[in-house]
Image (cartoon, rainbow, N blue to C red; front, top):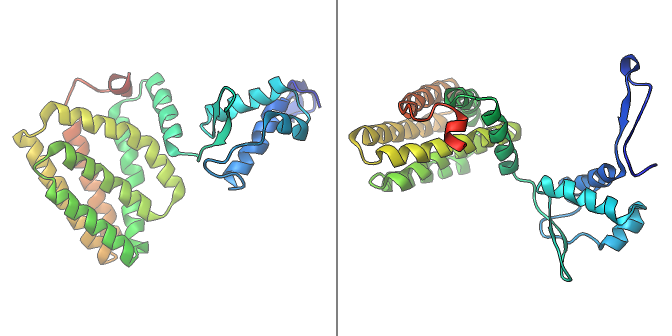
Length: 260
């Protein structure tokens, strides 16, 4: 096969079908090895000479494949005599950053993002109540206890608050929802930090923090009792109250205002 992509006929409705370039095929083969665990975090890829021989490609084609994988944060390539390509574990932060750019470009409002968080997180609270283990309860209770100790430190408290929300989704056990939540959380966390800078320690901020803390404690009780529907409804109300509070600031109304 040619190392450059080409188009051939015979597609659906008579359209053309794009044949991938050889660099894309090499990248796809290496990508599969990484996601299947055949290559793990920190592993060095074979030398360029060995890979060129294995895939029967030229050095420019191999390096193009490396650039594809670097752009996906699946490998890290160091140049020089002691350089080479090493494997990186796929992380949701890559998708989160890209999603942020797309949402900025589309002029997405922060309200839109908060509404999406509710759609993801509230059902996760219900799933968690259905599936929770004793270990899950221990982690939730430890997170609530840690936040309680940080009530007088707005910055530390909001960090613990955000981590509790992430923990609820993690313990729900649905990997797809966890990835989607990570994409939304990247923006929500930035909005939370910006809001802390604006009103940390104000009476309104203190009331909101205490109200949120009570909701976290109540959720743990419902999860412990396996009251799935009540847990989901409680979390939906909590998320709506948080949205109302955080969107009071008119200085930032879109994702672009926040991240741009």
